[in-house]
Length: 240
Image (cartoon, rainbow, N blue to C red):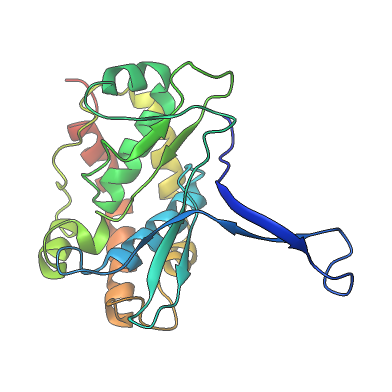
């Protein structure tokens, strides 16, 4: 699997010899910047936490960082470069082709989405489709999960507390159990402390306060345990 690179917008003056002995330069990277909105009240938190959880599991998603702004905290997702690897957005027209080219990555993304309650994956994946020697798959725009699975935080928490939800994934029931089980085992082996560290911070993140962050961590542990995730994956992703 090839690694992700990002768009360098500007590179200019070198740092002084006192600041760097390796010839480092100042530069800017392109990013997609998002903030909380009435339609996505926990966008910043969900984008940031989803990427942290994905990193724990070895899933490729675009790197994102928190950025301060006068109107409140925002999330900046770095723009993935296509200079070395031509990538396509995975939509309904090329979905079957994507799953054919990348069956393992498709299964992993689908299992991850079920765990975090993300039903908005189609249109939010970039993938090489046989146009480059490097295979690249990357999740982008991961904000429709956790506290953003429904139109309000309360409805989102209700969905996440239901071990049978989400009851569908747009990739469909086409995934071999072997590919799904690999990521299930990674999720099941995550220590509680790692989930806490990914979900709970020492301050409010956007509109998400500490008690809500702690509740998300506990729900993710609950969804992970006692074969709940295994049953959900079998019901939603495995061919009947």
